[in-house]
Length: 280
Image 1 (cartoon, helix red, strand yellow):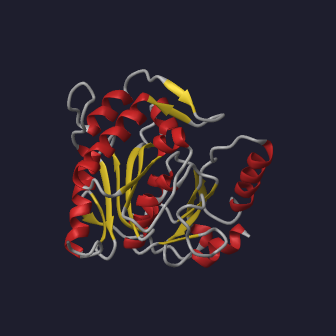
Image 2: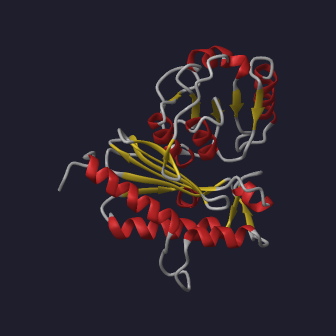
């Protein structure tokens, strides 16, 4: 078998991941197209459960994770798998050197529930714990972001690159409000936002970290940071896409990015040091 990081095999991994984001899974009473599952449910009333105070899960999250898992396991039965809904049930997410698919079936579930079209399927593949293949698909507006280590990043097949903005005061920053609602956490988030508002052009909260990272990759956004998100499924795909678009992803302290840490910062190639200083 070819080495797992050979270009031809990586291209195959990407193709299967794109298929998993678009096409049929098994045993859901009939065969559904994944994007149709999300699109159809997007415009109808959802059955919603709480995972925490504000963290939501719907029937569609669970159905889409099953669809994606089934498709990937059919092609790669020996690979490892980490999924948001699976980990919410089991409480475990262990990353090893083995090829591991890390999946968020619907990133932006709250957006999905409220009919706000910033929603995506996020599929990342790590090899030796390094994010190597990334697919982020927003089926509501039909935007497909892809990236493969050493092969570039693309939006609907067209190459993308991070912005060239070099002035922090002219930069657009994106963050999120996290998954916890205790007073110290919320105070920390709002105090940081208040501080950053004087240092950047403006701040956005879009409700999907995977799409936030893709926004950095395609130049719509310049900066991103978040501490306290759900897990590696939020960043596994976006990390590849950002790097392949010439952007940077790192720990908010300035250290190396750790996919399992639930801490992330990202920027174009010019603003990393300025963001780190601003976050201090």
